[in-house]
Image 1 (spheres, helix red, strand yellow):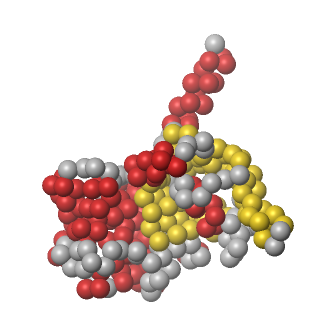
Image 2: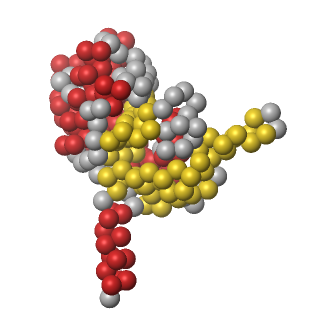
Amino acid sequence: MTMMMNALEKKENNMNYALQLINIDKSFTQAASKVAALKNINLAIKKGEIAALIGPSGSGKTTLLQIAGLLDKADSGQIFINSIDASKANDQARTEIRKNNLGFIYQFHHLLPEFSALENVALPLLIQGQNRDFAFAEAQKILTQVDLVNRLEHKPAELSGGQQQRVAIARAIVSKPSVILADEPTGNLDSVNSGAIFDLLHSLAKNYEIACLLVTHNLELAKKTDRIIEIKDGMI
């Protein structure tokens, strides 16, 4: 009975995590020799939790983010996203998991220049196969929440840097993913806009109970997150 209760508690606890990396190892080959990028990484982030990933250049931050986002494959270990085991998924299944469970925000917004703000934000829902009217209604709702209701038809070149990043956040949030992976989302902004963008991301992630792993060199912003995770030489 005790063993059964422990197993049930463990299962329930695992369901509270939106992202789990278990015993992740990753190496690259350079000049005919293997270089360990990640060493026995264990990391779990709960729904609604915002964690900052910090560390010096070359410490493994980007590699960890790419593996967590199923953009690269680990040499060994397990990855669970919203309790889905993505460790042994084929490329098609990984694409489906990404499409339905993950949102990405980068230092540079990567908006499609020929599309309006509304079209850029609706795109993830259209890719999911959602009805066009629904996709655009949801996009407008999120853009209203990020205070861009008056910029719906503006293209990226017609928006300021801070506004472009707000659109990028709206695009990442619109499909209500389980996890958002953010790589230096404020790195291209001044201090005022950086604070505003972080506060916006924090508010939306909490509101929709989305787990967020945020790579940053900004220690002031990192201190505002729920938890700081430091990585050095591929180890947490």
